[in-house]
Image 1 (cartoon, one colour):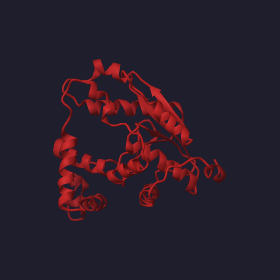
Image 2 (cartoon, one colour; image 1 turned 45 degrees about the horizontal axis):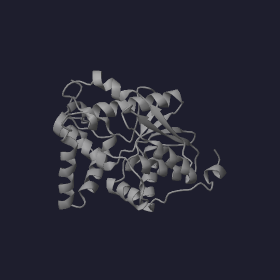
Image 3 (tube, helix red, strand yellow; image 1 turned 60 degrees about the vertical axis):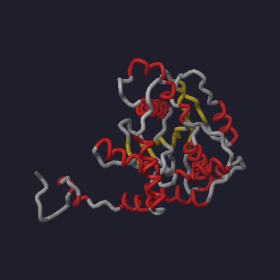
Image 4 (cartoon, helix red, strand yellow; image 1 turned 180 degrees about the horizontal axis):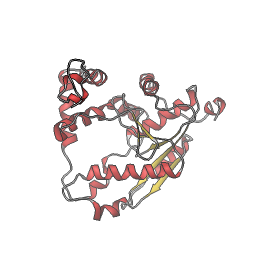
Length: 270
């Protein structure tokens, strides 16, 4: 694809300069998308993935390198699943889109373990289907719409519930050989809400998750963590700026894992 093709007269959705600047800087910092990449975007129909496809469309038109991307929506095989409007939306903006049929919902009846998280189960199954589609069609990168609020929530959930310190990586190589990337990882969730609202976009929420059809109590950990973080931000408007700075300034030798220490005065090989 050449620059003439990228700068076609295709209809576009406006995005704020501030949002585009954050996404562009993230791409440059972590080298997420570059020349010749073929990127598959997981399009759930939520505000995040819709913002992602339009950010990549903008990048495709204006970046000094060429790359391809397509959108893919995983269909679980549930009753009354309707994703036609997503295909129509993508067609309007000249974004190739596939609805990938699976039997995830049927399989879940026999494979999900008792007392396990339904949301986590379906998330893993959905990502596995997305990876399969990527493999079948020769994509070298898979893009997901996680934002900075997601990674902060995941960090504290891992700390509070799993006893580990980990967040969501902007890029990593999967066991299947391609890279998973998160181009929105430094954007705030409210920026994506604003994008959807300002453009009156039809979006899909939690009601599309198969877990909603299960007669189980929905997991409270993420909702509780989100509410706690909102309270912190209400008390200190800069707290998320501090989180972002902290994620970039990690002092390994102050933690209780000697294998991560980098000290000349202590033998850490034991």
